Length: 419
Ligand code: PGA
Ligand code: ZN
Image (cartoon, rainbow, N blue to C red):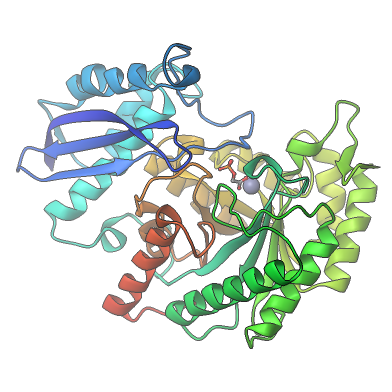
């Protein structure tokens, strides 16, 4: 049993220079811990609601003072002065206090910040690392395969590339530390390839390069070359490639997808992905089709689900009920897991449990707007899901998560790799 003395919040900046919340929880035993709230740009329509002020005199309407005031006021008042038995207990109370299906009243940003900070405070109070204190999902902990987003497009970069994320996954690395080394070495080799090819080496929102390339196959060829340059084997024995086209963002009003100016039907997209999987070491594709294209997703899963991982992000929104329904419909075989899509740590764990029980893989994920908070590194380890994506091996807010995983590996010697 524990008691909460206070909860408070600050309006701080995220990595994209937009306001977000830093929430601090103080327990009655004096323990204090805080959490930085992540924020997405290519969001699913059924995500929990991020409360923004809409006051265009401040931060173009993106301020979070209303959400901050909800933490300082209603949330703090509701959580003080009684004893609680668990994080789940408090998360359920936060959900009930909000009272709306998508946490629209108090804001998912207020609620997830409180939930994360509380989880951390409970770990500190118990003198336990966060990864050892978080409730698991019935699997032993392990170090996840990092999926480094080395080349950015879509809404994360001002280049003409429609696909949002080109990631490298050191599946064949012997340890997390060696996986990080592979990520950084391939990233450096890719920078050289781009510079030699006369491309800019400026970065997108998640720290990957954002050159003026428009054709996905051109990017894939460069990445395979960079993997080889760095001395690794392209493929699942060495360094493989994961894609997040984030296709909801380039689906047109008539339902077709626009890739480098060409219109593609859902079946054309499935044929394109099949070709990419044939020609390149692509082991995972996230949001290959849009969140509204359920029939397309079913055909995509039938066509490629035995060969590669098909991850649902926008279409699942880390929502246990939505994932359960999609599993019944034969959509995808893995879920992206983002804590702020659902709004409490407990519901995030529930979503992972639903996946685990159905044999769906899980990839824990950052958002494109981040803080140096490393919560998701501990979450990935605690749940033993075996996969994390948290951007390039560059930029402080991305590297903080990978460095946290290095520390956990050094402390625990836990096994590394996919489940
Ligand atoms: P977001 O992008 O954080 O901008 O939503 C990440 C993703 O689509 O996986
Ligand atoms: Zn995504």
